[in-house]
Amino acid sequence: MKTLLMAIMIVAVVASCSAAETVAATVAAEYPYICSGALRDAVLADLSDEMVAQCEGITVTREDLEAQVGKSPASTLEQVRKYPVYALEQYLTKRLMLIEAKGWAKASGQKDITDGELVQRYLDSKIPKFEVNDKEAWEFYAEHASMFGSSSYEQIKDMVIYVVRDQKISDAQAQFAGSAGKRHKILVSASWMRTQHERWAKNPAEKARLSGKPTYVNFGVNGCCDHMNPVTQALSAEYGDRLNVVFVHVGEQEILGELYGINTVPIQFLFDKNGKLLLRHVGNLTKEQVLAKFAEGGVDISKGDKND
Image (tube, rainbow, N blue to C red; front, side, top):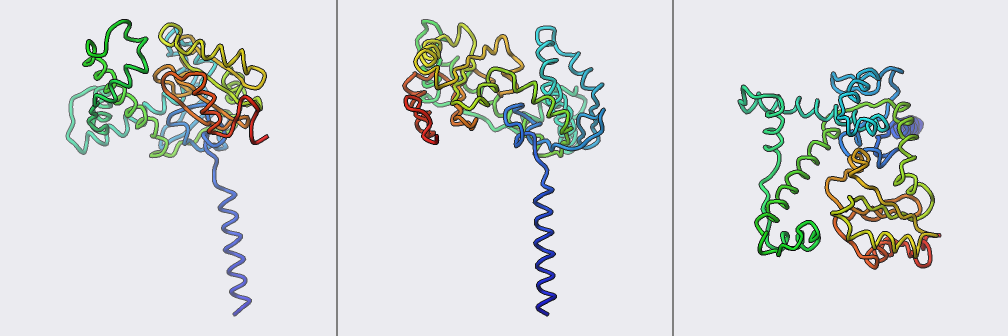
């Protein structure tokens, strides 16, 4: 009996170890910032040389993906060619949203509408009704005062409330669509994604993150985000020997911004020396606040990383 029990225990342990070894890696686990939507939860898999991705009857070959890249607007075509993972994520998300929307339409009796209208109604049905209180509106106005010129809060209060509510809706819809990878099993070619990451790792933000130094990245646009310029310049001038300071102009690098999930500006990312994200902040920060946020994450920029 003891021998039998021991044999059963050994088999169970071996089975458990085998299961642990076969847990498939996701894109987010291997390449944390290469995309921000449905592909984050995609499983890296050994697919045929010509196959880029598969998902519940949807197949994307290299030729298919090249065709999708070619449909990009002229203003971003070269950027999408540089980062085709963006085209793949957009294509799969649209296909999956349409599949979900058609299932919803069948159950809810929606008829005689275009695919675009159907998807929009489906997304609307998934998003709660947002309210914006005075405190939220005022904080947004104070944080983004440069957007409103010389207008006082009372003069444009209704517009501010509309902007904040619209942003909440947009964020919620993007988050829902971006979570499609949790509801559908997406397989993406491990070798293809590895090649994409080699290219991705050369972008200024990722190159800095992987450099072994703490990193501050400010995503913004010249003009509306000028309040952050003195902060970025001061950090670079005073701490450039121990801190990577990067500015990404998302007006010029739109696709790069999309892949990092930038849907408003300015946004700051703070990373420690190991590339771990310490903070993703929307809005303006002073130099002192940036240093304090690093310190909260165990990184004293004035003295170096506490984990050294």
